[in-house]
Image (cartoon, rainbow, N blue to C red; front, side, top):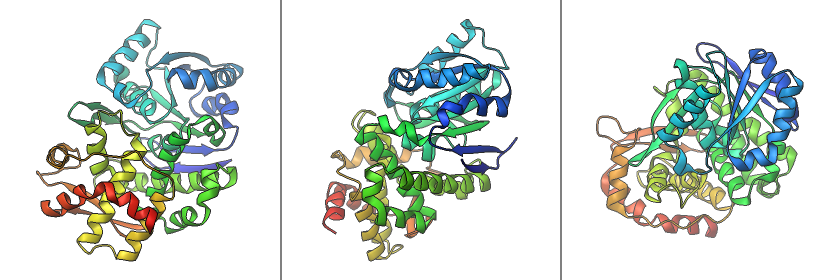
Length: 368
């Protein structure tokens, strides 16, 4: 079993990674929090595919567990869902000693995390992510949030889990599209902080797309280490942690423009990474050959859904983004592969030019 330690207040916690770990989840949870009543928040498909395995493991370890379901999809990541789940927990007798288990992808992790943060002013949270995106990013770091119509993740709280259990075996049931969406988030970690991880994508792209267990486990582990290092150094996103938002500024705007239906989160981040890379090249922060390598690595993961960019509306959404400070939009831009900088004051004409040619950037990466 691979272990990554995340050093946060009020306590550090571990991310544990092993194929088949879901079958041992009960043992790991008891070791972390004791024998407590567990409320598993999930979506119907995950419950159908993997729910029996999880409950069997929890029951074997003497844990009482029951499911609470959330409709599947980003558009259901709203305050109404948090209220409904919390009300259900009240009806079912949940108290301050209860444990929320987030069992699903990034949406489940965000919503369940916010439920845990708010219910009776905070109960313990266990993350058991079942998508690649959630495993390499969303389940680690304690960010919980829901969306507003005006933007993504605008209402939330920091609430660190007690434990994160990552089982690469559950990725076997992911659709090709969902799987690739997670790879984009992992590639992000390589661009901003780990050149060796980026190199894995360049050298082993075919093995990763084929879900080769050995290659995939290495990438998951390396991605989580990046996230853990950054979160441990800056838990509340006052400085270094902001680099994890590479691709998210424009990516979030594109998600919102599509009503959270057109793009998966990882796909939106991929478009955002291409835009940020292009901006970095335009302002001469990033050398052209490195920009080409980044665009090529994104394109190599497969075709993205097309985007239709309405420049004026997208610019307005950028102003409403939670990363905007003092009215200035802050972009995370690659300075070189393995290092990113946070840059404000990008001239609007530069952003506008990049947005207008955004649909062409993916084709440029394919042709490179």
